Image 1 (cartoon, rainbow, N blue to C red):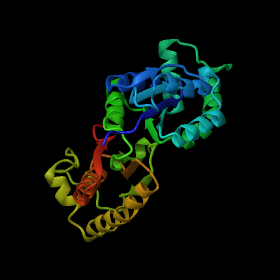
Image 2 (image 1 turned 120 degrees about the vertical axis):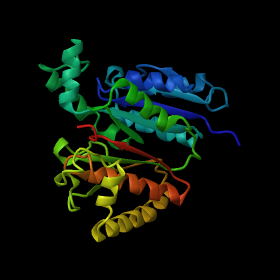
Image 3 (image 1 turned 135 degrees about the horizontal axis):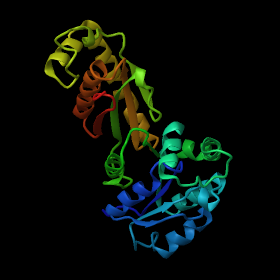
Length: 288
């Protein structure tokens, strides 16, 4: 059975990596159009014969440069869906401070007018708030370089079709470094015994067997794992039934090096054992 036609709409904050994401999709075989006004998307789909089985994969970068109106884009997405075109909205985001630094380093003007870069970023974020809320996939590039962004895009879209299983990303992090911007479910493991206070374990990480044994060796840890895995086993089929394709689960501890890493790895292992789910892990703060 052949896969249905697929349109990816790339949008997001200026400086968050839209161009890099577009290049990654191009490497995956998507035909990519940059800076496309929303009202021309249907024309591009028609010219690419996307409905009639010509090109199977098209991506369009839509942003504030083209006078983006969320209502117009929402209408286009609904219309294409009714015509059998699978449409995925990819939103690139990053912390305001990171975006400001990127513009200052490159000395490029921000496309949204403002007295300062900070004002321009704030105005653009306000304009894109509805679009971000509608996004199917959100990738936060605050702590990703261009190679890591490319990997994230390829992971999200390499098997793009409407029949792919739910993709679950389990991420560990440290609360002292900030809560992740993009997360669907968040769990706090700071109530567990902390390996940081054990001299022999402090230099290690949650990927080491000694730390894993320490963290999972208490009744509280065992019960937490059982309850959390059970909750996700309940939720995941229901998310899938609602059409959700991507789920990000964040596990936090104080520094992001020990407890959260162990729990994230163990949770990912249990989810893989369920079958029918694509599971990946990422440890944001393990090297800090």
